[in-house]
Image 1 (cartoon, rainbow, N blue to C red):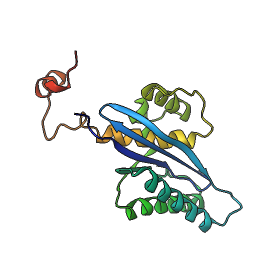
Image 2 (image 1 turned 90 degrees about the horizontal axis):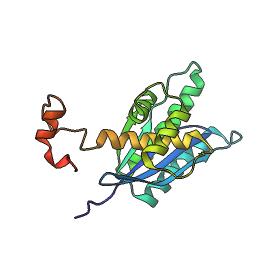
Image 3 (image 1 turned 180 degrees about the horizontal axis):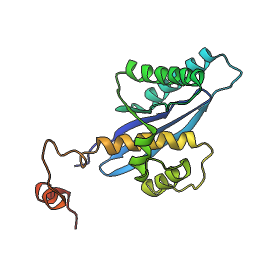
Image 4 (image 1 turned 60 degrees about the horizontal axis):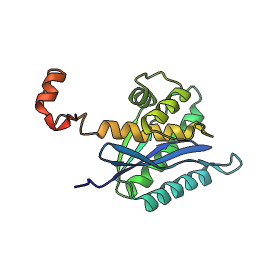
Length: 188
């Protein structure tokens, strides 16, 4: 009996470029359904850009009907005004997801990189290359790393939410104990 797909919307918030990705998980298979950026003109008023972010998130939710929403937390920079604007963009995206009744999860950039590459200090190129390997993506180039960052957030959420990582309250004492308590996870 095939388990139905779980769909995750991942977002890398930004005030000029907002990366977004939609993935579908079917068993152990992860399929990329959407991977792109929303380009926002610097000539537009900041509030117009926030409205466009809200509209895009709402459009993605309506079109793909995700089960959960994952977003990258803003990193702390020195420019307070930039941080304020980025926080607003993130807040609008979260509000759109919550308004649609989605579960929202937030991940730090370091957590996302650690989850994908095993190195919390990996650069954007390393993250993209690992995503290509993990998901067997055919295309080699990407126009904006904001899109691959959004994909990384969605995949990170999948990894955090994956039943293999959860032991349902079981205390494990290493791999042998895991195998003994989870024989259905073994494939030969």
